[in-house]
Length: 84
Image (cartoon, rainbow, N blue to C red; front, side, top):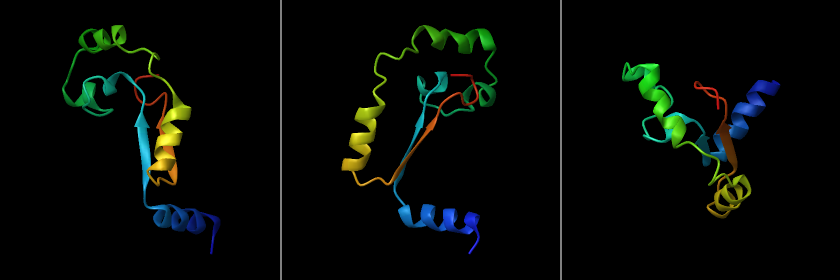
């Protein structure tokens, strides 16, 4: 079995995990392609920067909660699409 096949097998067996999307698109809760899909001008989209803070950023708590729920992995999509 190749290394890639081993990784794919692990991922398939892990089954339950969490993807955390950390960017402006998380504020309207519409996904990382929100600005593009909505054909939203950058000036309008940038208003979310006023709301986007790291105030509730607590990755240790997120990891504890994920583990308690039985999750085997977490993926953080930092710097994804809009640069955060």
